[in-house]
Length: 109
Image (cartoon, rainbow, N blue to C red; front, side, top):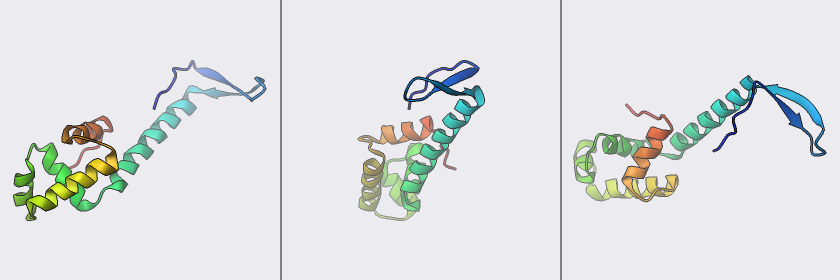
């Protein structure tokens, strides 16, 4: 998402370039906040509880084998969950998954 810096009052133009109103800065700030919150919720809602548990362990620096021991599941199951996470979040590496969570301000405790 990219946003343009706006002045305190920003004119709103119709398709024929006539000013049809003025929007204040608070409108744009609320729009940015809502867009950010929607994206954050979409990421969390895409993932299952098991996948979120795998991400928790990844964020703690655990390997897939260590995660399997902690969660009481097989190593292959952890790898399966990680593959699903990568597919759902369009990531290619584990570090991209963690980066996406940190950039979105998502903390998993």
